[in-house]
Image (cartoon, rainbow, N blue to C red; front, side):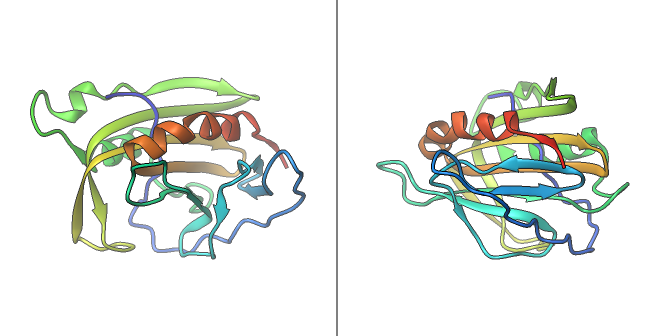
Length: 188
């Protein structure tokens, strides 16, 4: 239950500037940007309205048998904002629990890599997702059978957090698209 998830909130209530959609092509979704980087959203992911603290939000259609869509949120809080990579990993791990076995923190294995010249830390989590009822809300809804993929990209103007969470089958089906989006990273 380890691997790839890291987009976090720091308690910072600053609102991020929405990313601007640029070009789009038949093979890929719009080009988005934040913090001096650009990425291409996967075809079929539905761009959502601007939200506080997010550079972009995408809905990923539910896989057959899943009861809801997954969501990929991209956060950028500003240069020097958003907390450390380690603090965000701990936060994401704390958003999941396992019904039995070792604590999820013992199973989670963050990975560090370089993608197109950017340092990226990834994490994968599965179990019961403790979903927040809203921005900065202490109320949580337990969602069993969920999965999260995340990545923290060390961009030129500060960290950018990519976090996809949703029903396990939907997230598993979209994992290749999530990885392709990360591989599309480039400087603005």
